[in-house]
Image (cartoon, rainbow, N blue to C red):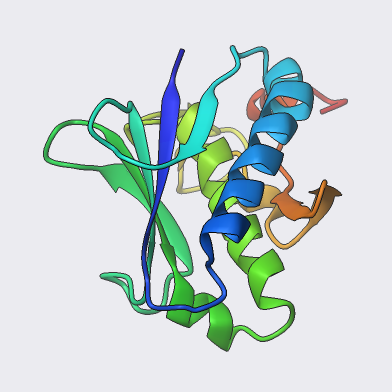
Length: 170
């Protein structure tokens, strides 16, 4: 089973241990009951804590390497997918700060599951002139929309049919 460890390396007082634990629990429920069945993938374990024996790391930080980004996923020096959520940039967007953080967090979880090493591309050569390959980012087409699971705001994601340029219904 793939495991995600959430670590808080930010100074934001709102990111209490209780909030992190509730966010992890709600994300786990959303993953297992909505995302996994829709995508045809296996359940994962999402928890707060140590990253030593985990497959993927979610890190809340004050400022990202790219200060314009709210969040992104990459690969660390151990070859593990790492998700980074920028607290300062997310706060500056306005609105409900904690909802925005969890939307950014779950957006990156969905995208990491669809493209863990950021190396999968879709061939849309017949649809996008001059740009035949599109990075597989299943959250970007519906970014900014979401739904609530428990107390946590979840990001939307596309269904597998979105990736098929010949699918007229998806």
